Image (cartoon, rainbow, N blue to C red; front, side, top):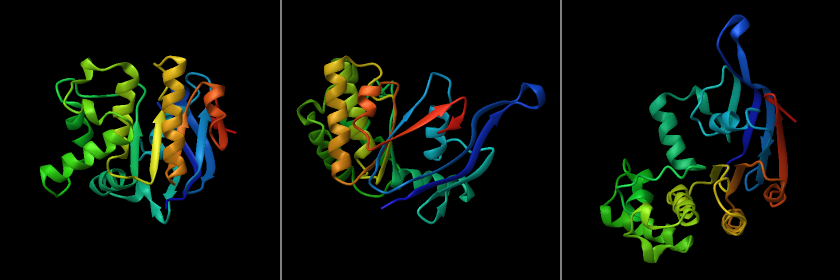
Length: 221
C-alpha cells in the first residue's frame, strides 16, 4: 500500500519577472486506496501536479513522500525503477505506438524487467482481458476505436499491478457513453484497492471520486 504526502511542493519556470509558478506550495495527503479527482481550469497547474506525483517532473521546492520514500531524493535510475513498480500512467492522448500490436503496447512497461517474453505476453493478455480486449490483442491501434484505445492505455497502466494509477483526462477525447465505461473501469480498479488520482474537467466524472482536490492558479484547495 502506498500513502502519498506532498509537503510545500512548488514548481516554477523562468527567472525574475518572467517567473511563472505552475504549482504553489501544495501540501496534501492521499491515503492508500483512495480515488481522488483533481479539478481546475485549463492551465491551472493540475497536469503539472500530476506529473510531479508520478516522479516525472522534479519540483522546484518541497518534498514528495510515497510511503517512506522521498521520491525526488532518489537517483534517476532508482526513480525510474520506483515508477515502474509503483505507478501506472493513463494519458489523455493514449500514447500508443502505432506500429505495435495492442499486446505489444501493453508489454512496454515490462521491457526492462527480467522474465521470458511468454510470461510478459501472458501478463499483457491478462491485462487486456481485464479491460475486455483480449480478443483484439493482435490488432494495431488504428484498427480499434478511441474508447478501445483508452482501454488499452489502462491495460498498459495496470500490467505491472501498480498500487497507484495516475490518469490525466482519461475521458477527455471520448463520447459520454464511452467516458462512463472508462470511469467504470477506474472505479473497479479502485474497488480492487488501487489508488486512483485522476485529472478531469468534468464535474460529473469527479463525482465518482471519493474526494476532489481543486487547483486554481497553481494553488491547491
